[in-house]
Length: 385
Ligand code: FNR
Image 1: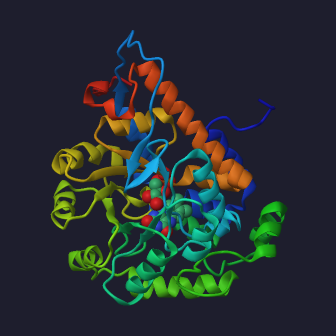
Image 2: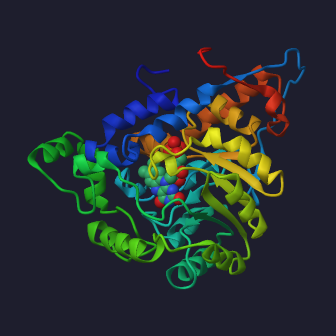
Image 3: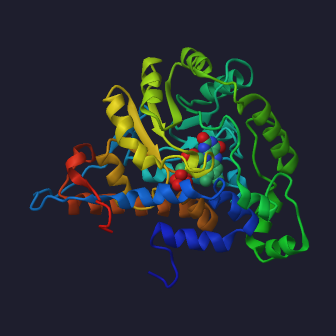
């Protein structure tokens, strides 16, 4: 290891924080209100100990599985993150290329910087596409485009009936367009590599919802998103409409209550993602790992149960799988890799997780990710750690 080279997700997090201006960091790293759920998503992993079996006698391990009808080399996909072009102009393509080199899949955001067609052109494999609920109109047009581009797995994000209150962004003047002050301009000038990359390519986001580049396209796309797709009146009928009008798989992303997961199963959906949008929406809502066991029990194998939020180690993935998840998604870790080293950075982040899962399984005495169950975890009792 060359000195200073990142070897963990936390190393990448610190390096990413130095790579982008504070304004952009507030977008990547921030969350709603007092960041209680951001913190809870992480600390929930400390509520569980792993319980290994010894002398298991396995000399190989198998991390591969299928998620949303897509084969993956490990139970980790990249989560949809909008406006990746703020982190790096090539961000969406970096993530796709990295995922393919590692043998896993991305879920591409509606608010991606590159359009679904451009992303599909750059990708050799099929990936998932995220969108917000809606019947007809903008949702239908996006579904048609995603289908023709070759996407077959839809992830419908349902935890944005309104946009969360991200005060960190407001304090830093983050927005489209950004509010620039002399202090903020000085900070941008201290990150010349980032500034050159974004200014030269003028890729920020929104090409699925608006045409063009730069701030104007991003502004137009936010307007479309807020007017048509992020609305508190959207309901289960909209999801039922999407199910009826999409021939591939449909997952509901942003479920925390067992009743909602059961309702999704009743509508014939293929899975749910236990998610709170990385703590960016309702602050104080239950951490995802805490919500997972009840959701998994209620679904009882009738559909896939995925989880995202706070995964930073292979052992976090192992705990989620032991508590009933079929696979997980990672959001910010990919952005850290993207900020530091583009596609190589995302690839390294994914291989770090893969190697940590493999080592963790061996140490736990488990050969196959499908063999993880609740016997491999024990709840921490109060006062124990
Ligand atoms: C997100 N997330 C998100 N989710 C979604 O469905 N559509 C989107 O466009 C975005 N955009 C987005 C931007 C940024 C900067 C972040 C950090 C997150 C939520 C994302 O898919 C996922 O639920 C969380 O990121 C998971 O938590 P971790 O892995 O970041 O802790």
